[in-house]
Image 1 (cartoon, rainbow, N blue to C red):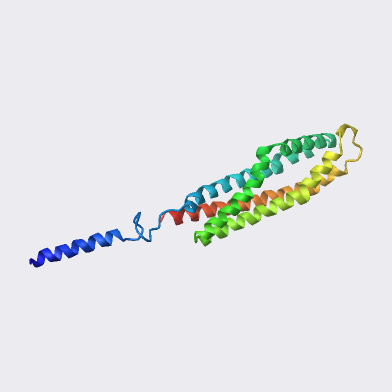
Image 2 (cartoon, one colour):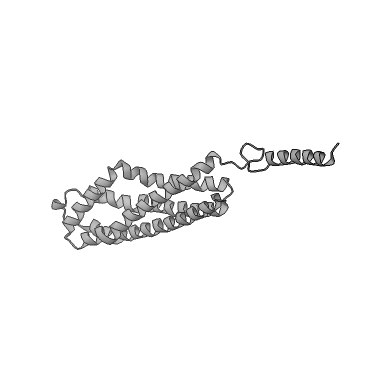
Length: 203
């Protein structure tokens, strides 16, 4: 038997077995192929970022233009305009869906990242979810009750007590600024999470 032939044969056999069982090779035992959770994590993070960004933009627009503009006019115009704004937003299904889905998508993204072992990313996403949850709490505890009180005031042309306007100029405006800051913080946290997610999945 030729020693060289035997050496080549065993070497070749070893090479075939080695390549066949290499971790990470598609179809091989122990492979690290992308799972369904991996495929959904990125789009879920992206969706969360877009939705939270939209909410931050909406609140910011009220901070810098809508509320200052209304405050510069008379109280009857203030009441009528805010009643119309609130009615338009309350009756908008797209806004309602985005408002709630922003929290659900962010919370789901945090869970997915945590289960995939990307703890650092999960912490940033969870922080964003908590910040946005506080936004929802403020909205339902403060802003919506004030909106309802304004709606119950009725026709602004017949209104004689404008105490509700003072509440809007004080409490509503202040809490809306807080909502803007919290949404902006959540958006920054999601941007950081997207960066970490991209680095982790690019390896």
